[in-house]
Image: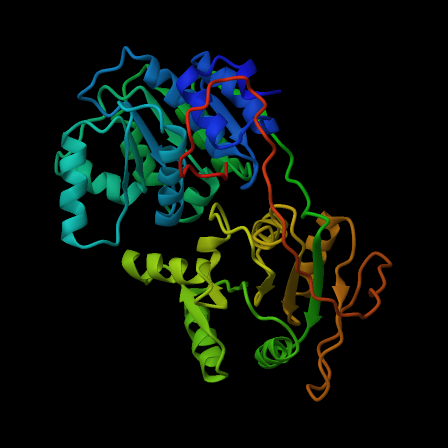
Length: 425
């Protein structure tokens, strides 16, 4: 189904034409018409399915059609992290290119007083769309910098991540300030009981759109080293000595581990940088800029960049720790093999994580290839396969590749020129 087959207005369609968007993703096809009809929507979909456009496009189309107060905050989009809030704001810039009266402001913490004052000025002017992290929005609400009494649309993005990060009380405080007739949209990558309870309390007779959690892309070569913790860094040193270490993300479960690994990699003369919640916003922006620009080869990160961060050309993802569950695993390794590229995902499995990794393998429906430890590192722990599984053959291969493109739009509309809109949904 194409975007032109919906009731999105012409200004939105012109922006999509410039950005070479034509065919909708499944989540867009199911959500856009329902949101345009004024329904509350509960969407269950992973990162990378186009969910940002699934809620932004219909809301922007309706705001552009008018009949909303000019001096009010008409739409609030809640995001769990600063990075995701920034990314949604960037997508908004592209989608709203032909909507001169529909602007947005991203509101998030970790900045100096100057940023807070800038946010205050925009909020008091009645920014039509506010994209915010919960804590920062509450800070503005508590000092009276904004009023949600006339807000028409409320979006809760990555609700499961919000709850994992402890934002439930903040969310409840914020939603109590919304008017009864506010249209609400809620997206979550997973649907545990606590997320469903939140949906029941927030949404009115919602349309539920659920895309099953997809397995990782076939282009990702998934491999694992079964090793003791002291062997992990030595395996990384071996990998980087024997291959191209550009465009690598190493995921760790805790920020203290990120700091420690980053220090140790720096001692090995590896061009790396850390990404975790203790960094200021300016520091995080700088790290992401340098990584995207190729000035940093290896990003050592917590799960803060596992979801919703738009980096297309990651060559290798290394799980220094086994993720907590299969869905976290999918989100992490989904940073690679995007936009038709190949990629490699390597997971370190210590003796405590064997059972957890076997659960991930059951979700994948296959056993992940186990690689032999490099010579000189000794033996690793025993990987006791369950349910009659046998170890995969040992081999080592590095993924890589280029190539990205978007299909032409094919509409016979007049040429409106081009602009620097975001090309990711």
